[in-house]
Every structure is written in C-alpha cells, then in structure tokens.
Image: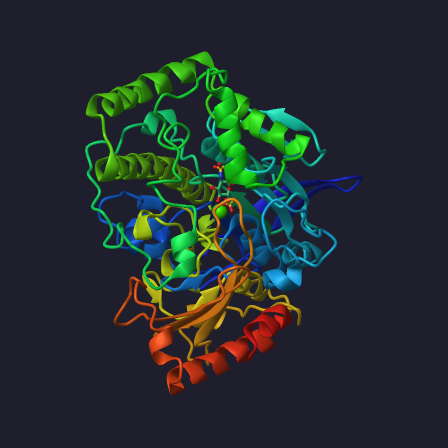
Length: 548
Ligand code: SGN
Ligand code: CA
C-alpha cells in the first residue's frame, strides 16, 4: 500500500496560514474526485496512431496512455465534423438536440453543458486551444482559445477578458505551454478539468519546423480503396474531397507557396477558394474578406523571417521535385498522396510530442495518480481510403475516432474495449467519475462500468446523422445506423438512396447491397432498429425523411 499526502499552504485572508492536506491514498487510489485532462485533437485519424495498428508512424505518447489505461476500438462521432463534435462533447446530446448541426454557426451558449456541473461541484474548469463554436460555452472559469480554425504559426488567442493576442511559435507547443501553466497556477485545493484543444492535425497540415521532412524516406502504401470507382454509391461519387481533384497543389501539398500573399494569380486563387467554400452562392463581403485574409495572412505569411527561412528551404525542394518530375494522371495523384501523408504525419508528430510533455508534467508534479488523461480526436479522417482526405461520411474512417484513456487505480493497464462508445458518452462518464448525477437530457451513457470490466447491458448499435451541405466538400446529408455487422444509411437532400454494407464480408464498404436485399427480412429488421434509434434520440426530422 502506498500513501501520498499532498499538502498545500494556503494563505487565508485574515486567518493566517492554514495547512491543508488534500487527499489520502488507499490501495493505490487517491481519494477525492480525480482531475481530468481531456486532450482533444482535430482530424487525427485513428489509422495514424501506433496503438491503433499503424506500423509506419511513431506515436509513443498516445500509445503510452493506451498501454497504461484503455483503448477504445469502436468510438463513433455521430456527426463527423469539428464544431458539431465539440458540441456533442459539451452537451452529451445529438446535433439535432443541441442545435449545432453544421460548422461556422454560433453555439447556443445558454444551454447546459457538463463543465458547468463540474464547476458547480467544486472543479476549476478551463478550455485552451481550438474550440470552434463561435461562442464560449457556460461553465468555464478560464479559456484561451483560437479564433475559428486558428493558425499553425504565430497564432492569435482570445482570452477570458476577450482580448486577442498573437503568440510567437507553433500552435501545438503554445497550447501545451498554456495548458501546463494553467495547471501549474491552479488552486491546488480543488480538482480541475482542462480541455487541451489541439488544432493539429487539421488541414493544411503544417508541421512544426523541427518535424519537416521526417517521413520523407517513407513510401506509404496506397489503401486498397484508393482508386475507388464509387459504383453503386451515388453520394460517394458526388463528393468533392478527393486527393486527385480537391486537394490543392499550393496550400495543401505546398508546391510554389505564396510566401508573401501577393502572387500574380491572387485573383484566380481567390475565385477558386470562394467556389470551394461557398459554391455558386454570391459570397458576402465578409466571406470574401475571409478568403482574402486566408490567402494573404492565412498560412505562410504569418511566419517570421527565421521561420520562413527554414520552411521555405524545405518546401523549395518539394517544388523542385514536383517540377522535375513533370507528373500527370495517376502518378501525380500518388505523389500528392505521399506529400499529404508526410505533412499530415509530421504534424501529428508534434501533437504526440506535446501529449508527452503533458504526461511528463503530470508525472513530475505528482498529479499522474489522481488525474484521468483522455486523448481523443474530434472525428476520424481519410488517409487516402476511397481516394479521399476529410471526413463527414458515415463510412468507417470518418465515423470512428481515436479514444484512449488513463485512469490509475480504476482502469487496468492494457484494457482494450470493443464495446461501442459515442462522443455523447464522454460527458456522462466524466460526471459519473466526479460523483455527479448524470442529468436526464444527456443522451450518452457513462463508460465507467465498461472501463471497470463489469458485465453490463451495452448498446449494440449506433445512430449517425450528418448535415453540412454542399460546401465545403459536397457530402450529401445522411443518417444511418451501424451494428457489429451491418451499416444502413439513408442519403437525402439531392441523393435520395439507401445504402447497406455487410462489414464482415466488405469491411471497405464498397459493395452497397441495399438493392439486392430490399425485400429481405434483413432490411426490414435493420430499418426497425434504425427507427427505434431515431425514436430513442428524438430525431423527428430524420424519422419524417426516412418514411419509417
Ligand atoms: C475548412 C477546410 C475543410 C474542412 C473544414 C471543416 N477547408 O473549411 O477542408 O472540411 O474546414 O473542418 S480549408 O480550405 O479551410 O482548409 S473541421 O474539422 O473544422 O470540421
Ligand atoms: Ca475536425
């Protein structure tokens, strides 16, 4: 039996000095509610993580969390884009209930969110880094957040006083610095809840300078579905998120970077980007300004001369290679794919390194024992599967997200969980962990029994509903359900068909077997399950559209 005694000297106004001893240790578990560090990244694909089976990358710190705690193999984000995922985390509710269905809207910040319950129960609460909700939710004592998507280099942050300040450096490092500082300066007599909202690995995948080129000697194998022809899948055929066509040579692949923001083709670039973002709609002057800012100030022009020197030397080599090779057709697409993965994974390297810094800080400050550390991505992401980048579809790579967690004394090291988790479960779980009753309205379940290995009745299927259309990636709205074997999907809003996959015989989801099974009992049963889920989660709009 080990005993840890944490003592804090508190200067109490008018009461002199008080010695407060926070918690006692029993059987390896510190008593009192645990601290919670929730590291939430952006677009970090589970396929890009060692613990999830990738042998070509190195993610020792995410792997460490999994090894010392639990790895969830089947966690699903039920509306696979950024803002909606964060709204799901905060509210524990589906998008149609919390109202945040598509990106770039204002989150209804008057609604209940679980950090407020933690706060009311003695926790100090903070959100640092990417939030992307257009509003600050209730229940946070402190925030220092990126405006919108934020920038990789020398990013601006908006703090609790609503002051915007530019900070020199690389965003993942800075968010980690702020996080460690906040923990360091907290009130040590109370537990804390901190979201470390990382921007990495969002498009345009700008690695930290020290990581540039780290994967250049690796040739990544093409996924089996890289040259998918989308046969039998009308919505998949109509998207705009392929490496071949959608991925930009300049901003994404970083050929011929416009370091000054005033390249001769500025007007053409502006037109192209406006089209990609706003389609055929006439953009408002605000939207036009956004795009101009993005081109002039967005990615590369923010770097100072020293940073620019390092990055431009590296990317000049890339541009030269590109020109020398005179690529076209498949060779060009495959070259873009390698470039994409190299920058994406190098960006992820800094993410993992900074997770390591947080783990190390917790170790060194004797906080590791009584702190739950969660690492999760806001959704999955395509790494060339189906020829794509981005997310949105109910298909596996974007439906499923990385989720590992360490909870010393409660979760056995090396736990692997197959049960289905959804983003809505996070709020329920963390309230449960803190000993707070989970409110009725939360649509997720506490994962604590599952984490403890208790035998419990658990969900056998998951419900999904995606909305954002047409821009930016022309993915038609759809809803559906997935169980351990089948996935049933209904597209609407222009593409009106159903899709059905047998994940056992077709894990890549390329054979839509809906038509072949339309009259069969299988479809009747799956539709009944889907209907039950729509009723359970009160998605009346989907019920109406489905005709079920
Ligand atoms: C931007 C990106 C899109 C991406 C969305 C949403 N375009 O619009 O590729 O899907 O963000 O991402 S870019 O030209 O600005 O890079 S999310 O993670 O915030 O949902
Ligand atoms: Ca995201």
